[in-house]
Length: 264
Image 1 (spheres, rainbow, N blue to C red):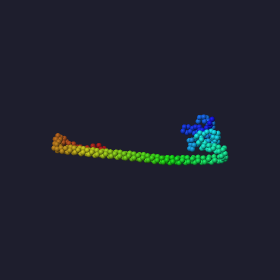
Image 2: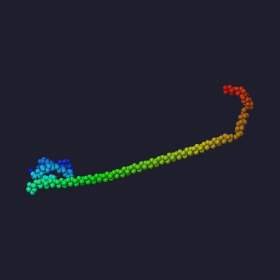
Image 3: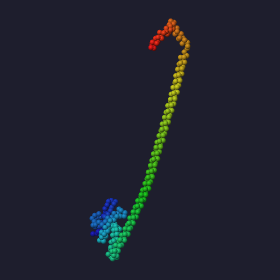
């Protein structure tokens, strides 16, 4: 039976992470395993690796064969290098202390290089975010300028419409005033015409009346004299004689006494 160090898939679609397991080569990928010695998440930058160093070294020394990806992970974590140093100690090339010293130096160099990578990635991320922020600020400024321009255009259009409406209103008012003035002039002209007509009519009536009076005044004196003569002839002589007597009789003291009684 061949033992393998391989990855077991977990997670969801488009976001997979893996468990580092020791399993039989005949078992399915996500099936039964012997031991879980760590995890691997490639979704981060750099990838996140959590590994049980001693157990991985043990399985390597016992003959477990890693897959390509797990070999890369183990070499990155220094398991392969530690196995190589221990084999050198067994062969007597150097002692265990020098092996530990070399491994510590390698591990420190690896950590510093990894830290540099992380720092460079962090700086790149900061610079990229700064660039994005600057670009976004520029876009926001352009949008604000465009929005201000649109608002200014809208305000100018509204002002122009208001001015046009005011001008139309003023024209309407002027036209109404002109119509009213024309109507007033027409009424005044009509009044003047009516007064002139009435004056002419009064003049005609006065002329007719004066003509009638003149006609009446121009009646022949002969007719008046004839009428007076005829009237005097028709009155009897006796009546004309008695009339003065009656007037003389009414003027005595008796008449005055009657008037005083009436006044009392």
